Image 1 (cartoon, rainbow, N blue to C red):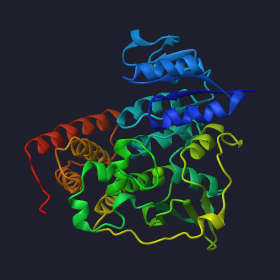
Image 2: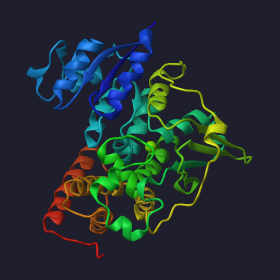
Image 3: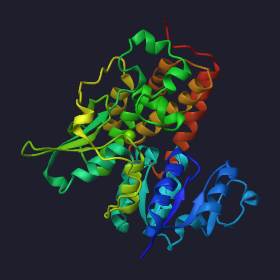
Length: 377
Ligand code: MG
């Protein structure tokens, strides 16, 4: 029987790669709905090719070839066996909660959902018996390694180190947008690529891993691994380490998540060869250069509303950097400033989370617009 799937954010980086996966899987999957934001030209092309019954776009009049449905209707539609949440940013949170409330399994590519509301989302998923299969390559790797979480001593998350791994601190401080966007290993959207340059992405992933696998922060390690072949690993209580390896392609974790627990050849382009790869390097992260990682650990440990503030201020600062308003290092300085002034809430509700997110963004933008430059070069 065909597995029925909807993709939230089909016109984005993960969404388009998911459609490439689905195309290769032939008759294994059937698309119920596709959703896009502004890019209705691409969405309509996808509708013509993949023929979903339903579609959503910001401008409903622009949709051609499928019936318009609201995001809520798509996320509540029980025709779905699984929904891939591939939108980026905070807009992923509400639809994810709707999907869980309707008992539909989730392939989760949206980090912010767990960073902002991991406690609420994981508790709800447990109550509703919903499986959340991670798409993020590191978490997908860990998901593949774990048989019994109670026997796991430690999670080991790998980080490629991004474009500034072998650059000096001052090179990083003077980085242009183009340099920061030139990720050596992964082809991703702009926001996540900048987060990978500061290693904030890895920090978000540590928080994500804490929630997904219920692991304490002091049992989650990050190791820099420039080749991006070992996607992450776990250490069992007896000292055995199980790692998941593969060529760095998002197609593989996407396919794993949407077809779990089955596996298919699908989009596999070539076979893995240890001898071709020849060597794998590992090193400790430089916490002076990649302060964001340290901040994320601290925010994760403090919990409550701190990760919400960190995520929102980081996202606004990243956009300001991409738009040439601030320097790369200002991103982290701005995040720190916002965290210093944050009024902590221990167990925020979803409404409070959105309010904190909103207020943090407003204050971050104000700070940026005051032309505050923290970065003394
Ligand atoms: Mg990742």
